[in-house]
Length: 230
Ligand code: SF4
Image 1 (cartoon, rainbow, N blue to C red):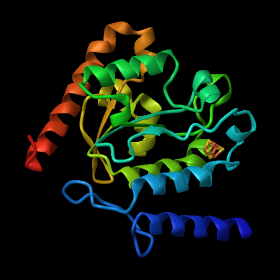
Image 2 (cartoon, helix red, strand yellow; image 1 turned 90 degrees about the vertical axis):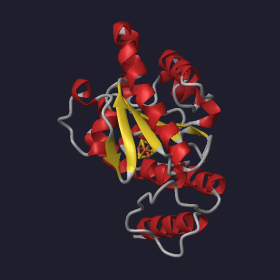
Image 3 (cartoon, rainbow, N blue to C red; image 1 turned 180 degrees about the vertical axis):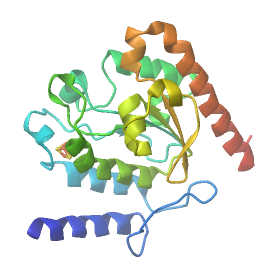
Image 4 (cartoon, helix red, strand yellow; image 1 turned 120 degrees about the vertical axis):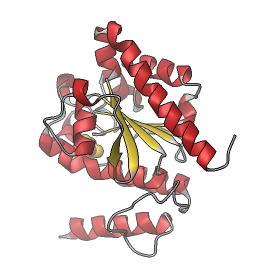
């Protein structure tokens, strides 16, 4: 009971820091991102709240929680599935070989890693890099949802089947069938693409991800023009 009360208290403080007078039932983007309070401090608050998280069994073997990193005011957010070995050691998302490939994609898109935000569906490494399990995703997804609530990106690019199917609430999705299409995630355009680890094993498919990235760039560009930017 004490835990539940503490969790509600944390959530209330979190949304207060975002500038809300009460907890939103469901946040929706209206036009471009709504102006909300201090994103940096809301993110710090959330990071502190998660710091000792023991909600699911992934807490038992992790070295570090991999919270996510980047610009809390990013227009583009990448979401993968789970930290791997290197990420678990460094407490940073996408820093292994697959991470280097993601960084190259971001740079090829004309952006810097620090300009976007990178996070995962679950924040702790599944043993032996297995897929995160249903109960683990269920326990952890609230944290990602709250990160998205803070950032309110203009567009999300999900990496791999698990990230896409979790965000879209459909386990049966095939990444080959949905990649490169634009979906809606709570009012935010969502473009699924392959996971960089898959692309390392199947480099012949890299051009498909580059096509998907161009769709994202077009969407971002259109958003900039709608805002009267150059
Ligand atoms: S994966 Fe998420 S829910 Fe599970 S222990 Fe880590 S932070 Fe907590």
